[in-house]
Image (cartoon, rainbow, N blue to C red; front, side, top):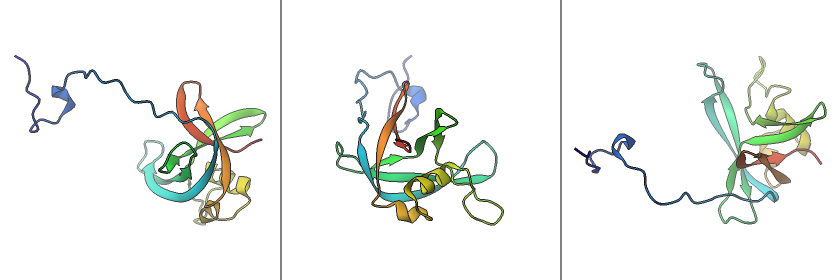
Length: 139
């Protein structure tokens, strides 16, 4: 007997595989403008401790609405690394030195996240296995 897919059972447990291919939302790396910054409290490492995740709202030339970027790429000890833009705080309540957000502030030469609004930055693809874009914090 085949399970019924009704509005009363929205669970994926009772849904077959569809025949519509996933739309590609791949955007090419480009020069973007940061138009806003959002803070979302999330668990960063599976613990009960919540850490702010910073999402940069960016105007990409190939998309009408802003995109969200929450990863950066930078050079660390001669290799390119990717970091998620967590904003842990130190014991004084300030953004932790050495965090990804610290890297962003240093790159844009600002003291506060609100000051990155209006700044331009190039993006780069996160990895060969991912089409997500990261802020490119190196030349």
